[in-house]
Length: 418
Image 1 (cartoon, rainbow, N blue to C red):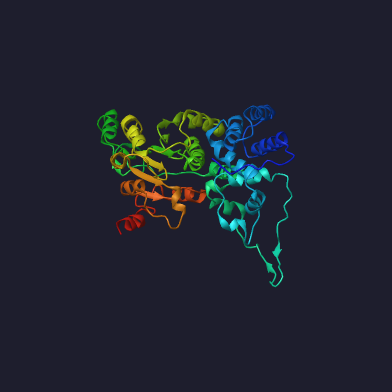
Image 2 (cartoon, rainbow, N blue to C red; image 1 turned 30 degrees about the vertical axis):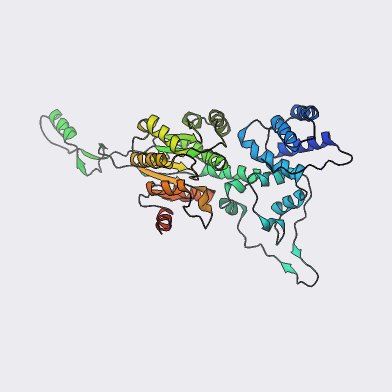
């Protein structure tokens, strides 16, 4: 929700034209808005009036927003277009490199960079090559040794990405693999290079030869692949991260020869939703659209303990076989009962071969387990890692088969005990 500030109505207003331009900016930012919705919005504003700022906001919201993931972008574009007198300066600072100014005051909020790109579409922007002021020496910036755009994108926070950057990140994630080593099994398979004798097959072959033992049959361990279980938090603070990680999980689920026996995905906020069958669709956009339609608690509250209880009760015995590896994607900001959370996370840990927690809050250097939910869950996971960028997912792919990997768990446990 954008900050409610007074609306200044000009002496010669052109409200219909402004609403049309506002709708065009929303469409550039990714909202599916056609001419019909623009006409409906103008008529709705005419019927509702233009006297209260909240009425105006929610009237346009009702006409233009029909998906939970569009709320943040709408709020940012509304604030920038209708309410912030310095919106052009804010947008320019996000689109161009700056030495000082608005860009230094704060980082772009969620959806704000997409809003800036949409509103500045078609506006010519001259990139500054140097800065020269009276009494100051000229400063030249040499960017010949800077990293490529793809390298920079790998370390960029998912929530700070623009529309184009998000699309490019998804293309990179579509090529990323999540390999896993097989689990040691007591079952064997025939092999001339095996180190164990297959007594039954050796005796059967000897009986067919009148009891003469001509060859010893050998066997080697048969590889067994684990299941991958993903539990994705889709509450308000996690929706953008989980959306992109689910895009990555769709790639893992449809990759042939990646090693996983099965990939199961669940979303949770205020309730648990099984979206596994949707990930099996070949088209990623259709798969995630179907998953989003089934999960009705996108960008809602967070009840991690209750959702884990539902998973342990209804799904654990069905999907946790074969030495399953569990990915828990959440920021750990629990609003429910901490005792229930501790009980259920402990049970989940005991049921899994490995429990890996991906937390986007680890992107901050000064992160500490001060939140009660984080402090409750941290001792019951095997590995605690960041999950906010492409680079963090690449690091996960490199260590997911290492049983001794703890990520940041040891350091944060030491800080928690200290």
